[in-house]
Length: 337
Image (cartoon, rainbow, N blue to C red; front, side):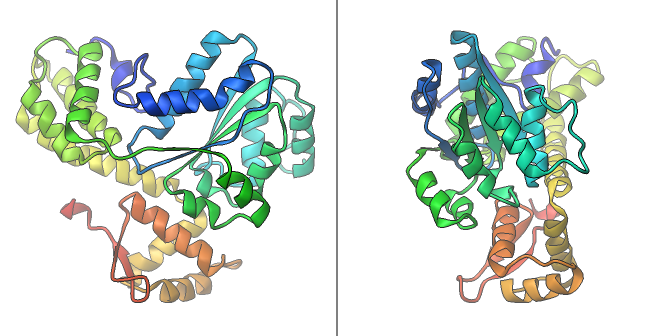
């Protein structure tokens, strides 16, 4: 059944993208100066989970590198590499500059100095940039003209809330590419393209693709995950068609996988906040911070913890009820999804 498994994998960047022409053109125009050896503006790409922020950013860079020979690119998942050192190290490692760097003893300033000395033109994607423990790192990169920066975040205000005024002013003056959730028809087109590239003809019906789109509720990551899981099941059972039962099981499995991946990605402090709610929720932000501060040695500020809560709500790990004054957070019940 599966002709090309690559197109069903998470992180696959297609040769053509569906329903994002305006965003692709906008981001391409922002990066165009780097093709002429000139500094490019920082781009801030925002939108809910599953709207194609990472895919579009990688797509634009790949297209850029097809046109220009000496432009490099590096990608940093800031949820996984949330410390200043790990982010800088990842960038340098992609550029081949970490041979003599000792992870335990090399000062951060030396890593920045090495980036300053780098002569090539490079586009840096900072995915989940609002997860950076020290967002001032964006300012350091912004000041190096040989680097073009793409900051990806769910919400720009949460990204801005943790940086100082000098960086806020620069980020607000940056080019902003905002992505909205997909409609069901758009998700159907995305799924149909993946089926055309990756599966045998008649492996799944259009009606089933519409049902996947409806179940995914605007989240392309979930929609493709459901399709991938169902196709994998059919292939494993030597079926030539995907059944409705396979789709139902695939939807449950894909939601569980995405949820577990989000849980595994939490930083140590975010995990403590999550565990506090797991044990004591529902709680207000003040009560959450109080209990959290009792557990950790170096508690973050109330503002930072509120950012954690908003992030986990965006990734469907937490739910919030009430107004900003009497809001309470609780864990999302996976069985109710």
